[in-house]
Image 1 (tube, rainbow, N blue to C red):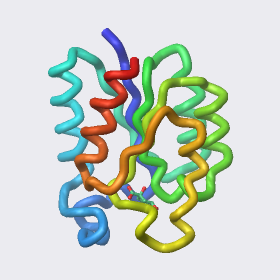
Image 2: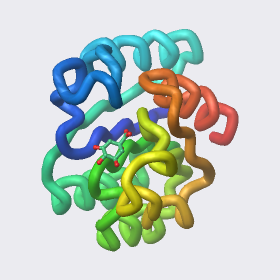
Image 3: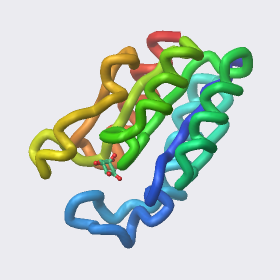
Length: 143
Ligand code: DQA
């Protein structure tokens, strides 16, 4: 069975309570449950991690190399700052889709730059929780 790694970056554990006008009311647990339903339908196996720590996310990506066929990642705030996460994705060479709940391009200017986008196969943003579901479907097409 193909295996996919899902990584949720910092503060995404607060979804549902965190700025619902921007990120919606759906919780991370609900998102994960829906992702698992999609995975079951397609007969793939999901491993899901959330971390607030940049180094931990780098380790997860690096160790994914031979274990996972694809990576679905919302790097959250690290999208805009982390050369280390970008380099890990690039070094691992794992097929990756980047997702964001919000449209980072119609928000504050500091969010307009993603360091991650140049090293992923595609990015889906602005659809709330649906960005994850569309991202997983897109990843499944690629692997
Ligand atoms: C986010 C957008 C980022 O700018 C922000 O720091 C997040 C969440 C999103 O999913 O919309 O934490 O990645």
